[in-house]
Length: 122
Image (cartoon, rainbow, N blue to C red; front, side):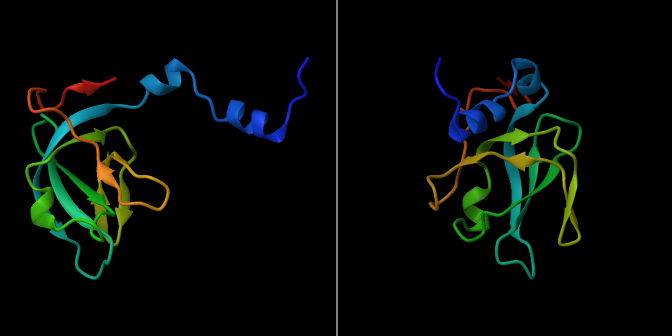
């Protein structure tokens, strides 16, 4: 029997079940508006169409890497059932998913053109 190490335990402790994963509501969205949040070096404030009645307001720390006009029209993956959070006095109603190498530029995950807005990502 293999001896359990701290590394093995931490990896196993970090595993989730399929039921845990299914609680996360990932939806396809499209950025309709985007502007730099005044007095913030990092935050962009966006309106994102998730196929709902009203667009969601989502703040993301992408300003060091992207101009607001570069974000408009992008189709992105959004965590839609994240508890709203207040950031610098503005409510964020979700989170844009982004990938980045350790210490590298975050890149918002793209959703293909043919996918209807609001589609569940699994």
